[in-house]
Image: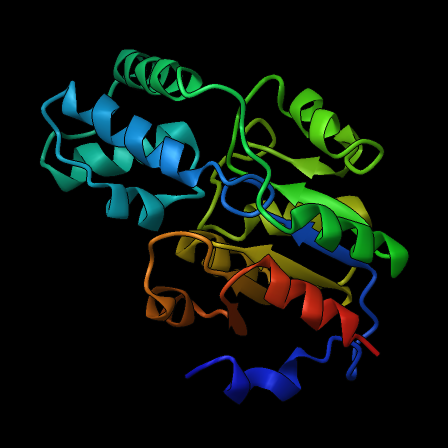
Length: 236
């Protein structure tokens, strides 16, 4: 299935009353996934655990503890201890931070401005637990993101692919599922959003195959933010 086959479904105003857009962060707001992929892969290698960059992309959206647990179980290491999780996540964070400041996703500034011009609320729904997240967002996108309109790793117990993060976003926004849309880039995030009953646009900004996103349940798969902007410009 391709972009053109879904074209009619991408008229966001059809039979809906969209009031908010829920954005994932890594791989959507920021072009940070290549760095996360390298950092996770290298951190796991220090533990003698294979974790390819493609696998990191497939696992994106989980909390840090969820990622460590999943890799341990996949390789027969059992459930990791809290000490294991803290050590590995600290190494991953150190490796990630060494890459420097995050890079905004190309075209995201224009997308956010368009969303604001449409009068839609903007929320972040991320598995990240980065303490300086709001400061980083405000540095690149001033007057756009607010703490009360964010769901992070600190807010959830289960995290993606469980629907909990997006259900929490709906609750914070005071909206029904048909009053929001989600912009994701990862299969687990798509599954989370669809589990919450929300129309989900997947923008394939990384190394995944489009089929990874279709099979996760995406309503639309786009190649980049320029295509997302075109979609928003066609909103009735």
